[in-house]
Amino acid sequence: MVFDPDALDRRDVRLIRALLPLFELYARRYVRLRVDGLEHVPSTPAIFAANHNGGIAGPDLPCTLSTLWRARGADAPLYALAHDFAMRQLTPLGRVLQRLGAVRASPENARRVLDAGGQVLVYPGGDLDAYRHSRDRDRVMLGERTGFVRIAQDARAPIIPVVAYGAHRSAWILSDGRGLARALHLPRWGRLARFPIAIALPWGVGLGPWTPYLPLPFPIRLRILPPIAPAAADDPTVVLEVVRSRMQAALDGMAAEARA
Image (tube, rainbow, N blue to C red; front, side, top):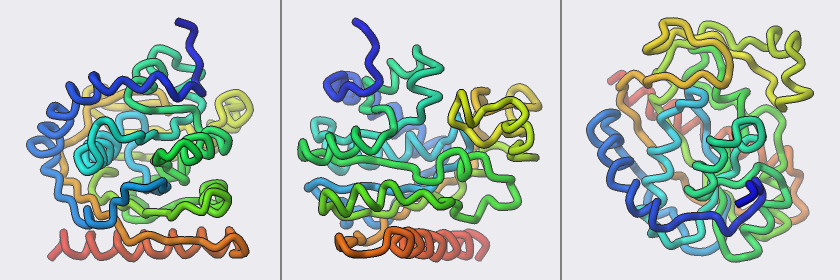
């Protein structure tokens, strides 16, 4: 079958059902996941907006997916917007992700999912958030990306912030590599603004956004926040800051609880 990164009909419910216990075993035993706020998971169209941690092997993704799959059921039309780099440059990975509900990140695809009654998981910060320096591990970095807000406004769908704490400790990012990314012209051909350099298992040093690694087993906590329903007339940049500030407040609280 020809690979189409925009297809919505490649989601494999049987595969999701088979992998869900494994994802949950990983979450429970390896990263000792704790989840708060499941009461905020709706059954209607919505955008789950999450912070991103740890790059291509970020342990926050299986934790978030397994949590939402269990809350909504494997049959529920939950899709994750995946970066162009994974869906177009790494086609074998894209094929696997697509069977788990991934679709190429674009406003059109998000709208198609919501119009069909589905839900969308999006990481607005993308590589800016995922590859941030480890000294910024307790910061939510969404940049100026308001696309998900505009989509929520157009679809009249709520934004459900999802905050992960602890996942960015899965590797030690020495540099986000923004200068290297520019030198390699990554923004042009890979739509990536970062080329991270990290200390990670088993390589010792991990280079670039495509290097998989074994996440360190730091505990992860996931908090699902109350919905934010932007009105059509709201300024998207203001809504973005509301989302970011609420996520940051939750992350600050979780970090303080972990230190206590």
